[in-house]
Structures are given as C-alpha cells and as structure tokens.
Length: 501
Ligand code: HEC
Image 1 (cartoon, helix red, strand yellow):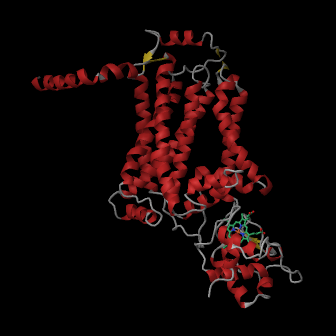
Image 2: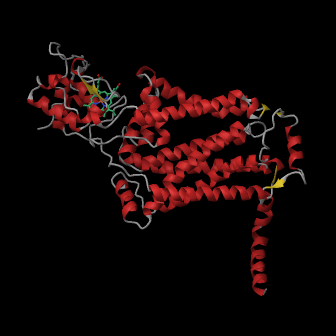
Image 3: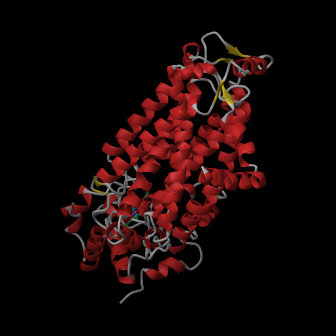
C-alpha cells in the first residue's frame, strides 16, 4: 500500500508541474458520435494507423541513420553492411521499407474512405487540405527514400526524372540543379536527397500532421453519412453538437480508441511478418550506367507514373509532365472548396464513386503496364543484341571500336539500331545523317532530353570511337550531316572528339 501511495505521490508531483492529465484527458476523452459504435466505425481506424506507421518510420529511420552513410561512394556499401554485418540490420531495413509501403497504402485508403464518406465537406475542408499535404509528403518520403538506396534503380530513375524536370520552361535547369546539386546525378545529389528525406519533408510532414490532428479533435470526427442527410453550413454545427452532446456521444477513449489500437496492433504484426518473410529491398546492382544487366524499375508505387511517361507519345510528354501534376494537385486540394456541401452518402454521389473506381482501375492498369510493357528505358534483352551486320560490314576499325563501346555502355537499352533495341530515344541507324560530330559529342557527353550524360563514364578515346561509329551510322549513299556551327566550329565538347591517345 505504501509503495502505491509513494508512486501516486511522485506522479502527482509531476502532474502539478506538467499539468499533463488536465491537458490531455479532455483530448483522449473528446466525444465522438455514437453511430461510430456500429460496424462502420471500423472504417475510421485508418488515420491513426497511418500515424502509428509514421512513428515506426521515425524510430527505424533514426536507427538506420546511425549506420547509413549519405555519400555517393559509401551509401551502397553501408546498406550492404547493414544487410549482412549489423545484427538484425536487415530486419531494421526490411521494417523501414515495408512499413513505408504499408503507410502509403493506408494513407491512400484513409483518403479514399474520407472522400467516399464525404467527410471532407464543411466544416472539415482544411482537415482534408492538410491531409493532401500529408499525402504528398508521404509520396515524397517514398521517392526520396528510394533514392537513398542509391543502387542502379534509384540512380537511373533519378537520371530520367531529372531530365524530365529539366523540361519545365525557364526554371527547369535551375530546379534540376537544386535537386541534384548539379546538372546531373552526382555526389551531391545524395546529400540533397538525404536532407530532403530526413529534415525537410519530415519537418513539413510533422507540422501538417500537428495541424491535421488539432482540427480532427477540434472539429470532431465526422459522423458516418446517412442517405438524404445533406451538409448545410447553416445548420451542420448545431446538428453535430447534438450528436456529441452529453449522453449522446461516446468518449474517444476507451471505445473507439480500443478499436484503433486493435487494428494498429494487427497492422504492426503484419508489417513485421512481411518484413521477416521478404526481407529488405535491395540495394540492387551498384549504381553505374555501364551496368549491362541494369533494369531500372522504380518502386511499384511509382510504376504507374513511369508507365504514363513511357507510353505517352513523345510529342505530348512534355505537356503531360508539366500540366499533369498541376491538375492532380489542384483537383485534390480544391475538392472541398467545390464540393464542400450537400449529400455525403456515397449512394447519392455516383460521380464520386465512379471517379474512385476509375482512378483505382487506371492506376492498376498503368502499374500492370509498368511491370509488363517494355517501358523504356528497358534494360535487359536488347543490350545483348549484336550491332546489325549491315551496319558493321562497312565500318572502319575505330568505328568498330565505337560499336563495341555502344554495346558495353548499354546505349541500346534506349536506342534501337535497325529497329532493334530500346524505344526511349531515337533509332540511331541513321543518326550520322542527322547530327554532325560536335552535336554527337555533345549528346553523348552531356546527355539531355531523357538521356543521361556519359561524360564521366567514358574516356576520351571511347568518346572518339563512339562518335566515329555514330557518324558512320547512315545510309551508304548519304553524306554525313553538316550542321553549320556558329563561329569557328571548335566549341568545347567538339574538341573532345579529337582528344585521347
Ligand atoms: C536512358 C535512355 C538512354 C540511354 C541509356 C542512352 N540514350 Fe541516347 N538518347 C536518349 C533520348 C531520350 C534521346 C533524345 C534526346 C532528345 O530528344 O533531346 C537520346 C538521343 C541520343 C542521340 C541523338 C539522336 C538524334 O537523332 O537526335 C544520340 C546520338 C544518342 N542519344 C547516343 C547515345 C549513346 C551513344 C548512348 C550510350 C553511350 C546513349 N545514347 C544512351 C536516351 C538514352
């Protein structure tokens, strides 16, 4: 008895000074509508589950950061070290990875549920908007996290992604510079993404989460929608007050909270189970554009996006890249402004329900296409194809060497010769009659469009040989391209073609 009393005294000593109970008790006991007692209440567990997964991410992320080295030279090694040397390091990585996937899924389900239940309508518009911010932060965490893996997948994804951002008029190159710490994927890129992944995005995320939670508690959990019950800003608050009035509402703790806790516990066990069974993701092959076996696949949740880009006609690509995101963000964000009142029940909102079905169908099909279609740059089979005989047979020795470089550097993952090869870039069979040497050198050394820069991967001699080969790629009876260069024609990259032993 004395012991208990002692403990109580100590606790009360803290309570007098911290006033925690007085502050938080009303929050955990805030009233929720009684209709949540029904089965439909199970739909309301997703938000707190997403939040718990976020905390799991923070905990495992901090632990990972104690070993992970965010430097281009060492990141890859440090992940392998975690996988194979650090006791249970693999499990830590696996949990971080799978719980991230799970978090993304739960966040999307949470959004869908809130959308279908019309819970974003008056007076919870801002709660929804903050939720949209949280969604994009989650996606941002997933993308930057995938880059931190710093293997061939992330390296290539980044290269292509940066080339796309580079297309934004006027500010594109500057944005790429900011994102990558230079005009292409380099040492500083990883530092930038590390900062984004552990400081910048989490900072925004937690600020938005705080505000989101504040509103959830202040404005109350929305009651499950009833058919025919329209949201009218004039009367809604009064009606809601009645739902949660003394004797009508239920305190959040213990009832609904227990349900949350049950589902959260289940989810955590599930994450642990798949982490143990499937283990950590990667790192895959080391990041090197010369890696012939590389098949850069973004994490599955970005496959749909890549499929859109890979399948869209090249002429529309730029517009899709530029305008698509603005539309998506705009629609999500402004939704409650345009549809902030009226019916909440999905039975009375056919357009809303059909949009959800359409979006999920479209995402599934695109993801499936992303997995199966030869979305470029597709990185297997073709690279092994030999340079077509009718091109080889008229080549000089240096040009032959160039053909070998082309083969080794896996250029045909993106480029076809005689129609065989990747489709991301133009067919190179007749490139010699389109581009002159300086232009060829520039393309190879600096990349551009959707092509990575190869300047750092090739020696001067290799570049010379490669350009000689490309120069020779033209119909037998056609002269090489002569593109008049302003000035004396000896510009920076042009000199490189003559460099080397
Ligand atoms: C990731 C895919 C990819 C890889 C790998 C790639 N390229 Fe490209 N390449 C492209 C794209 C996309 C373009 C079109 C750029 C544009 O539209 O500005 C292009 C354009 C070119 C062009 C100009 C073609 C023209 O007709 O305008 C040449 C030459 C070229 N690449 C050579 C190479 C060589 C040599 C390699 C290997 C060292 C290589 N590429 C590797 C994607 C790639």
